[in-house]
Image (cartoon, rainbow, N blue to C red; front, side):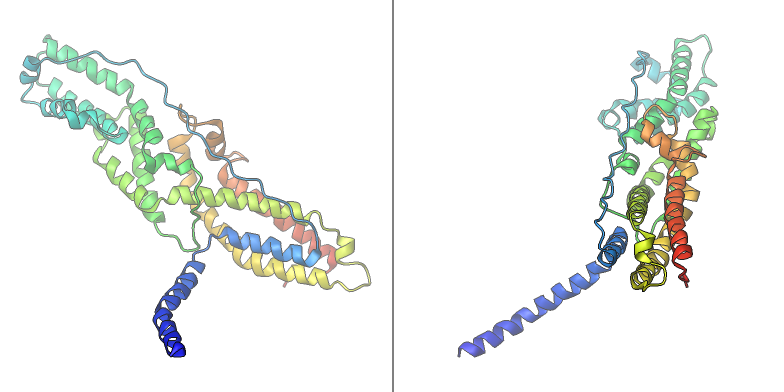
Length: 348
């Protein structure tokens, strides 16, 4: 009787066991790419019996609080608002002054400022230049034009779709990530708006594209994962190079003696670095070559950008993200070139 119960129990638990196994198999496919770098070093360590080096932990990249701007005390009375009822500006101001407008997000505030500027110009064309309403609306329009870049930067600072770009995350890009094209298009929309603000081409700005861009960025969170992945690969490249530089060629490939360990670590290099790590880093490089100029347009030398962020997006800088990744990979490969030459082992 006891054995029968046991059999029934095992049969009942079998589906759950299979589910767990399937889950482990599936999640195993989604390991962060950096685990390959870790395995690469572990295999080298186990072959040469040399103490490991520890990669430097990544640090948060801070954004700076936007500096305050002088507040405008310009107001339109109910009578004055009624006097511009022929303008869309009347409805825009009323909507902004209600509870919904008061709780608008930073992106919503930016959109309102843009729409006010565009509607104000149309409204001014219909008003008597000597009227109080004309004077107030013109002054408000000038104020908003002057400070529009502040509202744009406030959006970069406050909206999670944008400020998360620089936050550390556990997410790394996979070898086949989704969202690159959508992210590219979203960043282009935001960069265009900023360029139009800087050029004072206010009438050309499409304020509706603000939220469509944020929606795409939120959908994939590609920028945050890309920057995390690149920074991680730079650190791991540097750590790997630091480790192999501890190795002694005379020990690895003594002249006239067996160089078994040299051949083993050569196989490790080919299997993990050349076949997996290097192609992945080439993929990251491709993404950065397209996106880093847009990061530069959005973030470089703005009041909210810390020196650390400025360094990572500065065009042509040896310490920007793209060049850090390229140079760290090059230094590692150069060591291996010296290894193959000294040990007289064919890399193929």
